[in-house]
Amino acid sequence: MSGVWLFKQNGVVRRVESPGSDSFQGSARRKILVHVTSNEVVTSYDMLERILSSLGWERYYDDPDMLQFHKRSSVHLISLPKDFNKFKSMHMYDIVVKNRNMFEVRDLVLKLKTRRKTMSGVWVFKQNGVVQLVDSPTSDSFQGSARRKVLVHVPTNEVVTSYYMLERILLSLGWERYYDDPDLLQFHKRLTMHLISLPKDFNKFKSMHMFDIVVKNRHMFEVRDM
Image (tube, rainbow, N blue to C red):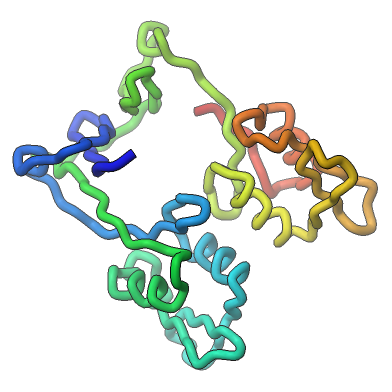
């Protein structure tokens, strides 16, 4: 898919394939950093650090006012503001340059509000690909829609959207890949009898697998409704 995401005033998120000038009236673009391998948007420093660590970067503590990473066998140093809200495009491009083919900087289009309004409600995922925020959901709101379970990493409040992301988190919690069954994606934790067995296809990752992960990783994951 190509195009840009438009965030409308009414809470609808829509992809515009060939956006014209009219599409961006009252809109603002901002840059986002995307991890190419997983196609995930970097939404926190915790997430960024996990990815950088998997690429051989290490935390560097030369400047207490900065979040820094250094890569052994190189002179590269990534220096970021400690506040993620101050993470700007110049920092993103620095990461892209120092990690060839691993990251991209992309445009996100935000539809500006004409007046301040607090949005609350339930996100409804429609069949036509539109995501809509329903302020006062009723049973009619969910006609043609279905709630689904998602696995959430509690410390970062991130939804697990791929096995790549899940594996990074599990490895940080002491789990290791286990290769007993070639038809499954498995993880084993040393000094325990715990074994996590998942279907190799992420599309077959169901709530029963999520709850198994929750039970074996107390306080680290939650299963929520979307």
